[in-house]
Image 1 (tube, one colour):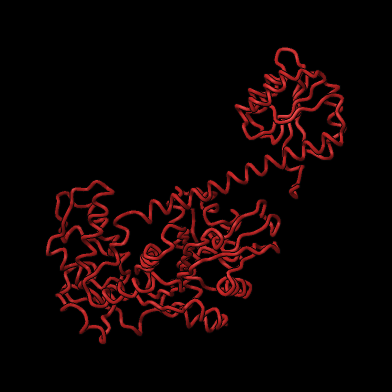
Image 2 (cartoon, one colour):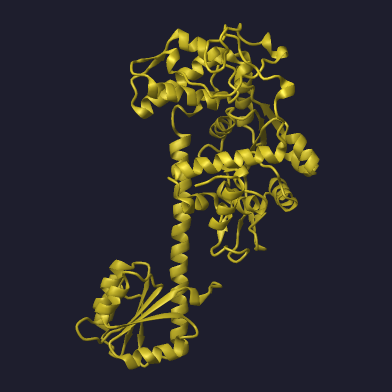
Length: 498
């Protein structure tokens, strides 16, 4: 029998005689969390606010028999187990009640306290199993629905299409590695198409029909990331009220995408190395080993590998995760792709938002091409989405384009010859009165340490989650797999006032 806290589940006892309720209270008050009702009408009213694991009812009650009551109770609380106490061996009625599903067990009176205690524990165990299975099904359905919406969208992979030589090389490497089983390290600046590439690798692999599980590692600090990846056993830590599978188990036979996994605790490093080397995982607080077959696709921003080395990340782990490195060039190094990408995003948001705009003017294309795109493809997508909303006709014009209010990045001299001929920068928020691009000198740009960068990533993820959940902090905490108190602490530490 499962190791359950019987006192954490409600048991409703229904009888029309107070003496019988008192006898039940005397026998089981220390073993179970009991609630009482004098008769079926009072019990049905109580069920409006009580969610019992077990309902125990006497058969002979005036006005409403125990069987009649349990049938109505089952409609309100279908998960609760119904136990009927009867002193009359009316087998035909009992068989009909059991067949109808209203009665799960019946006990002849006078009942034996030890035998009835076993029946109650079995009923509670069945209730707990039913609820846990439902939770797992809903969790899996959530992942399946997410995959169906995100992975199967026919326009999802347009972001990696491009005519530039460098992107043709990238797509060729994606095609090569997709068919293999090796782990992949994707390196690219913030806003690059790292997740899109990870999904393309998964869809192009023999694992296509299996799960693709994304983990935004910056949302989990310290032990929280370890719990998210490996799951936990009930009672493994404060707040672990139920057992939960980790993301690695959920990604079995499929692909797990780890977005910016830094920093890594020593314990997490050891666990992750074992999972990659031997295909074995253990939930926190458990000694049972599960076998997993998972392909890891890892994304890093430039410089994270050096930070890993400074932090003492195990060389064996770094070696395992970087078997096949794949560099994604920033958008400023492949301006030839801007037109195709912008048209792709316009089709995407015109369809989703039912907008009339279907094309971009040549002047708008020139303005997009002249911009340095510090936010890369993600920023281009945002600009085009705003333009599709602002436009009134079927053509996007330059005045519809609103760029992020930050300086352009200076064009790297070594890359200048590989890009399209430089167009004259259009006047706008990124140019001065003479039409010259404003670039912040490299020496004057502030340098953020790794901790500050991670705080920025976490702040953006939390703000996005709060917006997505309509400010519902409890839902945000649930999505990130953390306690609400932990979420409140992070919001306060990051200066997020909600």
